Image (cartoon, rainbow, N blue to C red):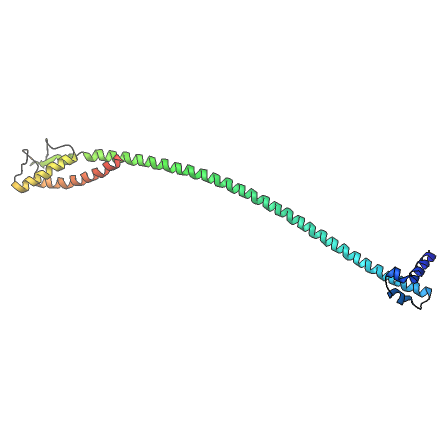
Length: 218
């Protein structure tokens, strides 16, 4: 084995330019004995091998770090895919909820429309009922006067509707103011004081009747 190593080193000494590509090695062994040259070259080889080992370790470290970075990149890529999938799922859920909300809104609108229709019909029914009541003159406006015993004397000729009775009493008052007569077209008749009091009542009643009748006719 020593012979092989020694022979190899002799070859390196004999052909330094071929083995190491320059005069550097030749300068190291020039003027040295064979044993010294072998030792120098062995030291140089050990140094080179040490550097190669360092480079190999660095290369291994770089490869390890590269693998770690690649693993991290793969992990980030997986998380990114997961986030994108979750985002898409959330988007689909949002669209689904939006669609359901739209359906509920439409149902709520329909319910509101029906409720308004019911209310309008109820209001109309109430207005029609009030108009029917207001159209008729109240019974107390048919009392012409009171007897000495404070008994009410009802008119047998007074119109039944509010408007007709109002028209009659307004003409009664107009005639009274012109002629001073307490009798207009009938005898006995209303007294001026009673007629004036009833006119105020019937005017307000007629105004309310018109309002309620308009609501009823809608």
